[in-house]
Amino acid sequence: MQDYFSKKWLIGYSYVLSIFLANLAVAYFGLITIGWLVFPAGALCIGITFSLRDLVQRDFGHKVWYFMIASTIVTTISGVALSHLPIPLWRVALASAVAFLVSEAIDWFVFTVLKKDIIFRITVSNIFSTAMDSILFVGIAFGAWGLLPPVYGQFLVKFFSSLLVLPVILYFRRRSQQTLV
Image 1: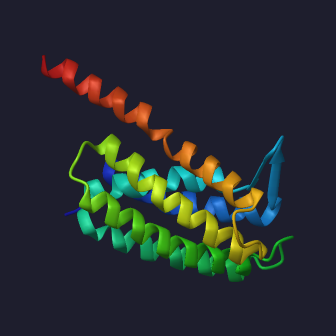
Image 2 (image 1 turned 180 degrees about the vertical axis):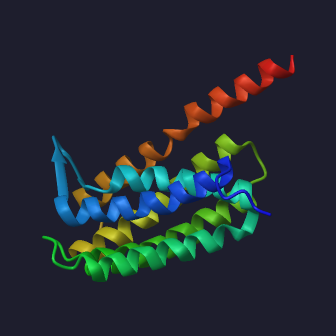
């Protein structure tokens, strides 16, 4: 029997929840400007989502697609249920679903093809997937196509926030190596 409260399942649940929270942040707050950087409010959560997806793939293998499909369904249902927000969540949900499926497929492919260390795989797969996600999401949600400030702002925030899991991975790696010695 599966232990649905094990570490790997908690990472899976966190993955799905991070997508919902990111879409909610975009619907409530829209675009955020900090100096020259412009990005959708949910970009920080989605950056972490890409790395969580990689960890779910590491733990569940190609069954990660079940989590990806569940995330798309949660996003779509929440988009309908919360369509009264300042930016209609249905539009955010549509943008998220399209950008999510395409960018997550790219992330899955790059992560799968690379046979290197987990840190290298996360970094490289997130470069490609966060770029595609940014282009598609901003284009669909806000009607802003091209390399506009919200696109490259979102890419920077998503990519660098996706790397926030790396110190955690390194910490646990060092800790497990110390216990083996």
